[in-house]
Length: 281
Image (tube, rainbow, N blue to C red; front, side, top):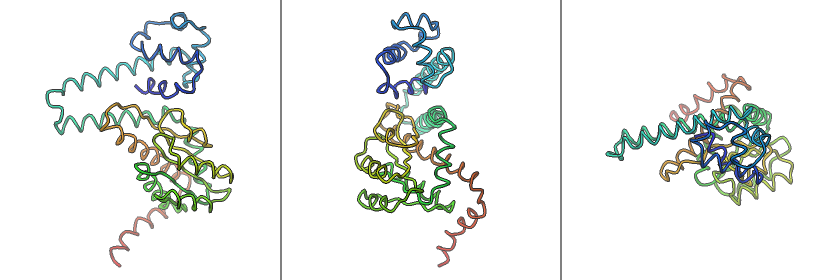
């Protein structure tokens, strides 16, 4: 499923030839295992070299790797559909709800390392590690992720700021310098307030990190480094939960990378005692 979601997420940034190939694969994913690269090219009406370039654009070494990934995606989707059908007589049981959530979470978490390269994750961690100030902006549901990430960074001794008011956040952005970082979190990647922050930060030469759903969007294009989570579950109840938890999970991965880089377990131990101080006051 991850492979097919990656293809859907990149549709808007594809050329006409790439779009034809992508549409064919999405419509005929179950048939791809029987196609050679030349047969696929003939079916779509393009050259074999275009198929190879398309595979590489998606991050695969060649057509065999793409074909394997698509086949795995088809099997995963079939398994999920079969499991869903088996539970149809009692769709609202607690066990069914829990299993559906766990399966979807596992799928979304696994996808994080497929749509975000190791280099990008390490580069983001380096940027956060070297920053003197980190402003995290996210509104609505993304604000929950922003506050959680702020707390993680504070535990590591980093000066991290966040605010739920766009006007206050803009004021905080004006206090950032060249060594500061702006982390922008948005599901759609099209939030107007965040886009204004990105434009303002760009004018002040502040480095920008975006965290959005995996698709072409204005926020990721405005960022120096772009991180992504999947947004492809058709279940209107599950999808907002999955996106939020995937965003938090990716932030927690960055937190663990920073723990390794900063190597300040002593500070973490000291900060873990702070809640006890509040109780004793």
